[in-house]
Amino acid sequence: MKNTPESKEKQFDFFQFPLYMLRELFSDRYKTLNRIINYGLYNFAERLEYDQFKAAERVLYEYYRGDRKFEAVKQVADLFDNEILISDEDYNGFCGKEGFSPEANESVSDLIAEYENYPDLEREIERFWRIKTVAYILDITIGSYYSIEKMETTIIPEKEPMPMVKTRLVFEYRDNPKTEDELIVFAAYIGISSIMGARNSCKTNKDHILSRAFGYNKAKDFTEPKPEIYQKYKKRYHFDLLKETLEENWGLYFYAYHTKGLWIGKKGKISRENLIRLAENNKPSVKRELRKKEEITLRKKVLSRINGSANQRQINDKCTAP
Image (cartoon, rainbow, N blue to C red; front, top):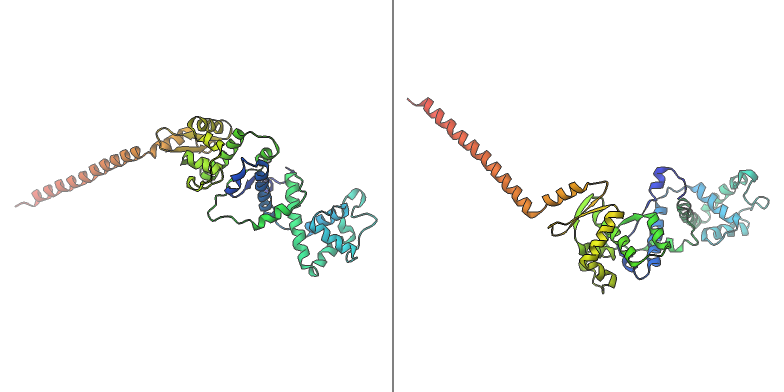
């Protein structure tokens, strides 16, 4: 990632995407992670604050470099070819030691002035600038932004979970060979993150985690034939190994001692001791015992007041007796 102000850089640390995009992870890892990346890049691009001058400058830079594979550059090239804009034939926008400086021959202001005559031109240049800016910040190369742009038309089901995952992890798992066992850890971590959301701890269960890992909101939604990797980790032995890996390397705690479910906590946000305390205090038997103790305490308190009032009336009666 390029050096940028910390506050600006952090907004690009995580990709957020619809959970259903995970459904083909085990059948086509590269395609799945590419979709997640494209969706994340589109969201990053849309959050940028548009700079009209910089956008025009950037598209002119691409034009003078001769790179015309992007639609925005092609449209600008047409303006030069038709002599609506005048090309800087001597310097091609570059001014010696000063580097690229199209404003020196007023190319930027001339291009911006043409937006009134070509209403769609600025929109195309803005889209181009957003994607190229994100690519620069993340230090990646984008050959075409068609696949990224079409994410604008992606229809997200209502109440679809929107998990977040570190940007670098998505690229790492896309660009490097991974075994199914490594993929299930990655997917389970995303699934758990989607269940926990902003909470530091929560209670869930194995079926819910595995369903999320395969891109489904709830276990009942996972009606497709279960792949072998799902059946493997459905078994207690392998699921326990999955939990161990997530505890050791992915910043999570697990607790499930007679809890009829699985408690999960984020390391650094809640201690293991506090997670266990939370789980134990939420057991029905413990809650019943606490209610009983509370009732006994309150009963004693009420009886004490009643008895106190009765004694006081007896004293008052004695004092007023003839």
